[in-house]
Length: 145
Image 1 (spheres, helix red, strand yellow):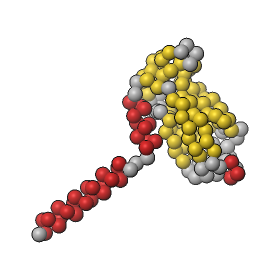
Image 2: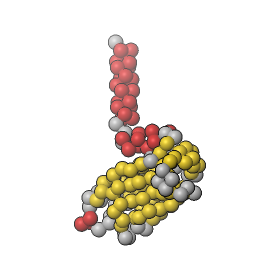
Image 3: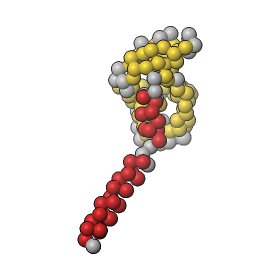
Image 4: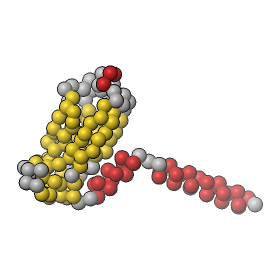
C-alpha cells in the first residue's frame, strides 16, 4: 500500500511537470521551430498591452517594458517583418513609433541559413551572430550584413 501511494505521488508530480512544460508560450515554441528552419521570411503581427512583454519573431526576441508608450495608445498592434534587402538583414515594424518612454530591447539569436531577399526575389545564405541592441523608436533596423 505504501509503495502504491509513493508511486501515485511520483506519477502525479511527473504529470504536473509535463503539463507545465506543455503549456509554455506558443511564441517560444514557434521561435525555436523558426530558428531550426533553414529558410526564413517572416511577416507577423504582435499586440502590445501595457505590461512587460516578450515577443518572438523568428530568431529575434523583442522585449517591451511596462509603460513604454502613453497609456492611451494601448493596445497597439505592430506588423513585424524579418527579411533581407540587398544582402542586409532587417527587422521592420509598422506602424512606426516616434519615441518610446523606455527603450525596447531587440535580441537577435545566432542564425545560419537562408533568408528571403526582397530586392532580388530569392533566398540568400546568411550567418547572423548573437546580438542585443536597444531602440528608442520603431521603424526599420538593420542588424546584419
